Length: 238
Image (tube, rainbow, N blue to C red; front, top):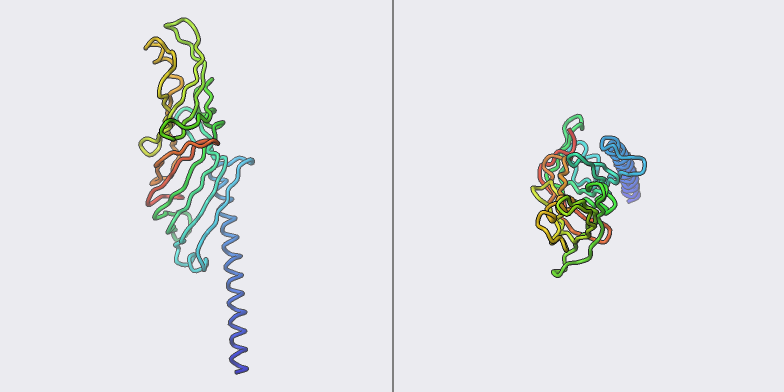
């Protein structure tokens, strides 16, 4: 019995050492991936990146080159949207069944989902000059909407009109965010409404989404808009 207890103690100590080594390894890997992510996405010093690798044990996942779940959060990423840029205030992504190659230089997730948050300040910077975007409360159906304000010179009237409109936000084609006013108050002249809409109605296409990842839906909140993202067979690194 004494010998059995000694064996059990040894096994428990070895198991504890393995767990400790496994946790040290995963923490080092998470820190390294976060640093690489921040560097490759050109995240500014004011931004941040964090990575959490789920599943135990981690070392056997490394040997099999398949990670169960990888959760990543990045703030301050700048994305191209045609001739303008938009700062993605915060990106959260959960990638499932991430398969890597032998050198770990590439990774493909079988599926992934998450959210992209864009603040109204960042939406304003992505809009045309002189356009301001803010929270517009809820419409009659209870859906959130944004308020878009701008001063627009209307040649047909020979003067500048200042207008604030309530716009809906939609996602199109899996990569485009569109703002469109339900109506333009007191435009009066159809030609004037077209000029005003050319300023306050706009769409921005996000061109830097990883292959396989699409924008699916949008929710308007007091702090900004939340874009739902998801996809399958997503290239996380090349």
